[in-house]
Amino acid sequence: MTEQNPKLKALRAKAMELPLQPGVYIMKDKQNKIIYIGKAKMLKNRVSQYFGSDKNHSLKVCRMVLNVDDFDYIITDSEYEALVLENSLIKQNKPKYNILLKDDKGSCYIKITAGKWPKITEARHIENDGATYIGPYTSAAPVHQTIDEVQKIFKLPSCTKKFPQDFGKTRPCLNSYIGQCSAWCKGKHSEKEYLDTLNDALEFIRGGSGGSINLLTEKMNEAAENLDFENAAKIRDRITAIKKIREKQKVVSCKVKKQDVIAVAILNEKAVVSVLKFDDYMLKEREDFKFSEVSSAEEIRTEFLRQYYDSRDDIPPRIVVDGETEDKELLEQIFSEKIGRKVEIFLPQKGDTLKLVDMCRHNAAEKLSESTGGSGKELSALQELKTLLGMSKIPEYIESYDISNLAGGENVAGMVVFENGRPLKSAYRKFSIKTVTGQDDYASMQEVIRRRFNEYELHKDEGTGFGRMPDLILLDGGLGHVSAISKVFKEMNISVPLFGMVKDSKHRTRAVTSSGGEITINTARSVYTLISTIQDEVHRYAIGYHRNMRKKNTLSVSLTNIEGIGEKRAKALLKHFGTLSAIQNADLTELENAPAMNGPSALKVYEYFHPKEENS
Image (cartoon, rainbow, N blue to C red; front, top):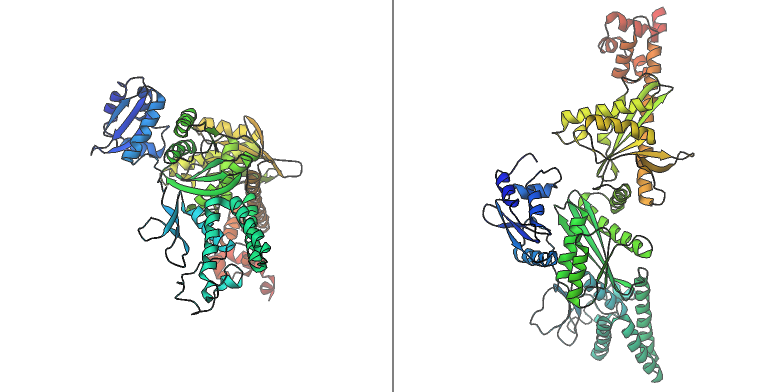
């Protein structure tokens, strides 16, 4: 941290006087405003950490500590009581540096307007307008979905026309022509028929698809018995439509009757938490929540669970999460006591439930990608890579290196960069090996890495290019390359995750390797695709540079056959003109003005490529 709190020593001294008991601590700024609230199993140990070394602090914690002027504390009898008290105080004070979940419970209703021809619409608030309201719903998503379904199943109007005033004034809209509306605006249906249809739709909303099918089946049979075959056919079509909706819902189903699946996506201190809500074995609803200034998935996951279910009474018996959660047992106890039955927070390791977690994580990544400019697929791959490699954070900035030579000749290296899962070509770099003679890939790679991090020391204040520390380095090679570079890391005091990319006998990416052994990536499809792409790209870039060097060196040799043109002048000519053909087509003046050239040497080059003019 470049800037420090001037009261840091005093705050640490005060923290060291705290008891080794559970409780809640309350951080305040100069205006005595509460900026952060936390709980601790042992107050002294936890609070003193804030005012010690900042090496292990996230940027968010560093900012918070910088603004702390004083703190208070409340001792509790247990960690459980501390957690409950912390949650209550956060809700009351909404501190700046706590993760805050905006609760939108009760903000959305299904509204059935008043009048003889009521319509089904959406509403944010209950008004004293004579309408009927169904809800509240915890988010707008299930309201949109339900209204859309009932309008299509029961062919109710979704337009803004007012009945009966607008009967016959305009042609029916497109929905009537594609079979999604009964063209009520024509005025050819009775008010009773409309109200009967609306009531069937309300039964569907209130009772669900199962109860609605049973009721409609009874009505269909009754209509058939009364020889009202036209009405029976309409009801039959509604039953068919409901069944189609149910089949679509079953595409995403689970073996547990009621559960929530929760996953987190984080990038650049931004996060999205997605919730998939399953009921009656089927996916019923999805919710997404955005957060900023997030330091870790475990932190956001814990805070989200606590706040999300604190304001809800419909806690399912099982909450499936995508990673470790702090205070897991305490949260289970709080939730279980709240609803009077056991609640389990479950982290799946395999099977169908893990597939649901992966789907939820992909949804969160896709939502997060909307604000980062990438794609959910790339972000999901980076998250999976982080987990697979056991990294503490998502590798947003990846550097990869490869050595290319031919029997030790034209020894070069290429560095490619992937940012947020995509190639960042402006950051690619080429290296011509200077200190290694002959074919020694390990020594060549060591030279490249030393040069790269020497540049970092010169440009680290800039924060871009060589001035940016990578989150991960991937070497095109096996354990030997990793071992060679690990020595350089130790020598230069560099702590960046380092892995080698290993190919099989058919030159396809097979695994990544480190000092801890090989990690197979074939089973992790998104990671396999990302690593393969990086390895192919760095190999292409390095070998392309090598071929270009060989070509230039070959051309340089041909130029040195000209009297007065040594290796230095030959390379200068090629660098200036680009190709041998351009040198051949240059006139005498252009050659004279080229770097490292003079009149006599320019004439020799010109005469070499224009022998006919010399003999004329």
